[in-house]
Length: 91
Image 1 (cartoon, rainbow, N blue to C red):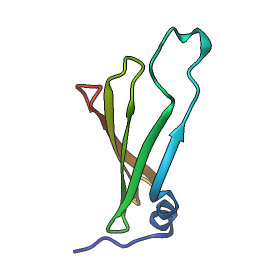
Image 2: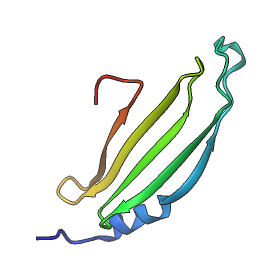
Image 3: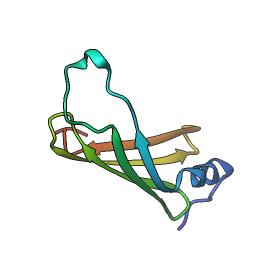
Image 4: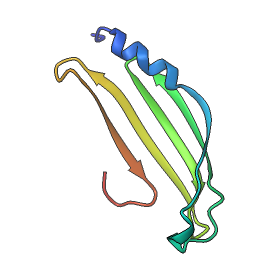
């Protein structure tokens, strides 16, 4: 049985695609090495969810990968999701 796709689910479609994520490290952070540019690829999962994979270089020059899911829960009437990262040991 497939859940009904609502307008809130359709809103997520605008987040799909390939994105270049850039940022500036604060001057007083003391961190070196991060170029401030990451790549994110986001796809739809059956129209109900999006799944994003983001990769980039951390300030210590190590590679990091993040996975995020995001969807709309009609019972809770809110967007819900999860986030996992190669930099963390918890969900």
